[in-house]
Amino acid sequence: MPAASGKKLFVGPRFRRIRQQLGLSQTQIAEGLGISPSYVNLIERNQRPVTAQILLRLAETYDLDLRDLATADEDRFFAELNEVFSDPLFRQIEVPKQELRDLAELCPGVTHALQRLYAAYTEARQGETLAAAQMADRDVGTRYEANPVERVRELIEANRNYFPELEQAAENLRDELNVPAEGLYAALAARLREKHSIQTRIMPVDVMRETLRRFDRHRRQLLISELVDPPGRAFQLAFQLGLGECTQALETIIGRAGPLDDTPRRLFRITLANYFAAAVMMPYPAFLAAADALNYDIHVLAQRFNSGFEQVCHRLTTLQRPNARGIPFFLLRVDNAGNVSKRFSSGTFPFSKFGGTCPLWNVHSTFDTPDRLLKQVIELSDGTRYFSIAQMVRRPVAPHPQPQPRFAIGLGCEIRHAARLTYATGIDLEKTEGTPIGVNCRLCERENCAQRAEPPITRTLILDETTRRVSSFAFSNAREL
Image (cartoon, rainbow, N blue to C red):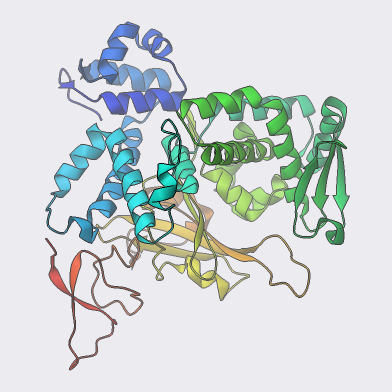
């Protein structure tokens, strides 16, 4: 996004994203930059250019790294488009990569629309959407959300997994409570009791059965299963307070998302209340200061803030406050079958939205070494390198003989940030060879991979009964057109 002095740039969508990430109105950012609100409006509609002077003033006033802000979004949008246009559906259409990058940069809204349309097409192709007859019965004015989970993930990504209204509300609550981490549960229970007339009760598993938390509106009781560990109990109390005390903030954020069906709207509200709960347990200023001081030692952070490993990893992906940013991490949670149940990114890692992950990424190996934290330098096919750590977690405990739920948590960042992590101590990050991985098998074009589960959808499969290769699939070097 930087430009040479005097050069005029038409970067309306990027300018608008930066303003929204700062949580500012057009009038507020106009005052900060010393220009008129009408000029800001014209800039965002690409009807007026942004000069280098305005960009520099924007960076100085709000302490922004404009290059990082622009690149992260554009790389993510480009990755989404690249995945969509790799589908055999577009086999006869050759779309140059530069055109996809131009579209990602100038028209992020179109990128989201194409991605959502492709998601609906994919689910329909797999028989996961409603039948056409059912669709016809819906009210004309009602929008259809093909996948509410993906829709909410899009909203989180659009906000860089950072919600300033909830951060401020959480900090205000912690200031009012004024207790250390070990006293948070008791303070939250007292808050619920005294301000909301809600009693907290820890209940036996034979009473709660498969439920971990339940709010009894009639008896004004918050029931929590004894299976939930202490960090989880504090989290559930903070979640309940978020629903009760942050109604206006939640509705404001949801309102910015535009029209939503009931299901994604409810899911987004729950997700935001979860965000608030984590912010209460790990208040932004104290948590960021501790993370920097401890070189992002997750286990020590978990002890200091009385939180779990996964809670800390997830919180690290939200540290995107202007003037006080942490390392831009990405996070992945998978089960031992490779199903992805959580993914967040405040950086540029290109998660696939229509498939699993690469088996060469050692996040999958944690199930074989449950008590060890694994480290790895990984490299995508475009040469981009990342540093990642991974560990298996158990949550929550299940009564015998039910299977104990296990997940693997992968946390990573671009290699340029890795030196700030205690886990990279003693590793020559420049010389260490990265493990070559792909986004997933269907998009990866690396040859001779013994772990390949399917051929890339961008190549023609070669079948030869006279030859058996290391990989189960051989394919042509030329892209299909």
